[in-house]
Amino acid sequence: MIVTENFLPKVDGVTRTLARLLTHLEAEGHECMVLGPQTGMSHFASHPLVGTLGVPLVLYPGLKLNFLRPRFLSKIQHWEPDVIHFVDPIWLGGQTMLAMDKGWAGRRWAQSGTRTAHGEAFEGAVVASYHTNLATYATLFGLPWLEPIIWKWQTYLLSKTSLTMCPSPSTAAMLHTKRVERVRTWPRGVDLPQLYPVKRSEQLRESWGIESIPSTESVEQPSKNPKSSFVMPLTPPLTPVTVPADIRNDRAPNSKSERLVALFVSRMSWEKNLLLLIKALTLLPAHLPAGTQTPKMVFVGHGPAQPEIQRVCREKGIDAEFMGYQEKEELARCYASADFFCFPSFTETFGQVVLEALAFGLPVIGLDADGTRDLVKPELTGLLLPLPDGNGAQRLRGWPYTMRDWHEVCKDASSPLFLHGADGYARLIAKVMVDHELRKKMSRLACTEGVRGYTWWDAMERCVDGYREALQVKIAKETHSEDRNRVRRTGSRSLTQMSPFERKQFLIRRALRLVLVIIAIVLLLMFTGL
Image (cartoon, rainbow, N blue to C red; front, top):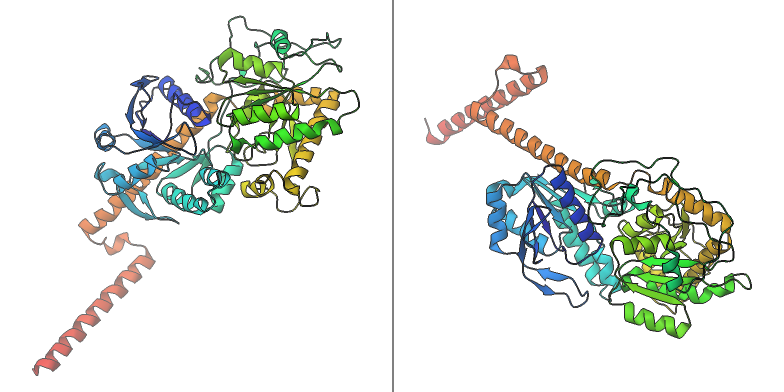
């Protein structure tokens, strides 16, 4: 059973991953029920959905504060799931956990008495998955006082589970610093075989205003499967797959004189650090050789920041195209028709779009921050901007840089730190643009080494492995409890069944009891005068 704060039709990294998981569970023969927000659907991938009403969140349109309904607790009690999975528990998940604590969903889900760093764990097999840096978002939205409160509440909820799954090693390290125990990584994936038939679209590039210049360089083509086609990003591959060593991206290399396309794919919201990207684009001409054209900037996605970003691009003279939300083949063509990928976010727990960009052979220009640094190999599959210090140099001490470090750099667009960071990011863009051979090498390595081992089947099985581990923990607790009760029912073992140490301790305890009884009898006789 899955309890989630968010689900379709809202599309983001969490809901896409959850949809993948449900499809995978169906394919592997597992039954599941989803308790979450109202979706307008009764089932997804044959799994029943039970919804509840919520209040829209003013600070973040598209999200709701959902409320626990009694039907959720009755479903948990009567459906009798083997495992309960809480996805990003904070509000609805928190309410459900507290109700389970009280035994309102059945005694098997009450607290076990097992102590953790923050509280007591559940008796049954309960797991959580951490996807969103909500505490950091609170600071980004101007509510820094809320960050420690959110962290305390989240760590309390996570401590009540058998284990916590998170998308990347850097996120796991961050959770460890918050004293969250039993953390396991649950990475994401891409549909590797389905990506390669998607061609670079010269027609799409022309619609972006890019004049096609024939290249004289040869292109290494991968083998084609006439039956393969690009699959919507909500369906996992049917079988495990690996990346053949000889596969190369089938995008045609640029002529050195052809104008390049920079791509950004994500939700258009301020926590994606879009102001740093815009400022870097305004500083970019100073770092390009004379006569070099600035790149065409293509934004794919929608969100609350889009109108303001469009206005700033017009005012600053940035040649940008806003494609809105794209999916299926259209999204694939955007990836395949770009030349490099710009992603300056520092609030990611994984960076799904970074992995997708690598799969299409796009060098990634990002920040040395959680999530992105786990996927991009500097100088091989992309470039990462280190944290700048106040003098504009790159700070080496204090690595790995945390979200709090990057927030200090990017929170004020007029500060020297922000300007140094934007200038450094512009230099990285210029490096990828000017060095044609470096860009080709990164493109080749990105779609091979950059995505090796990242299939959706493998990723979803990691989650199922987490379920299995939680069940093993539950069985171990039950076995320990049965052994303890058996000893209480049957009394002590015979002396011949004990080890020498246990036998010695047993005899000492018996002797002490006998001495205490004798002393009590003597005192009683003295006080009664007998």
